Length: 76
Image 1 (cartoon, one colour):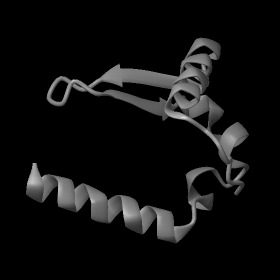
Image 2 (cartoon, rainbow, N blue to C red):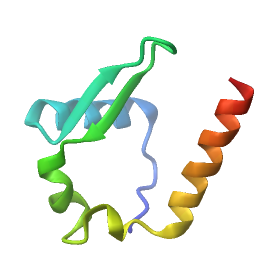
Image 3 (cartoon, rainbow, N blue to C red):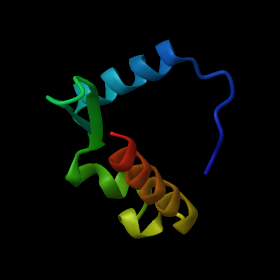
């Protein structure tokens, strides 16, 4: 995993839009929150995450996401 320094919101949005254009990311609008949600196209997971796919995501990241979802559900 690498850390990209100096990545602004604008640049992040540009990168996501480019990934959508080339077909690596899919985007959908959440009707409830009106937020745009981006996710990897299933056929591109191995390219971006390696041969292990989502199994290669560190457990700590998975735990943080699970905790955040629980908090958002309680607060939401």
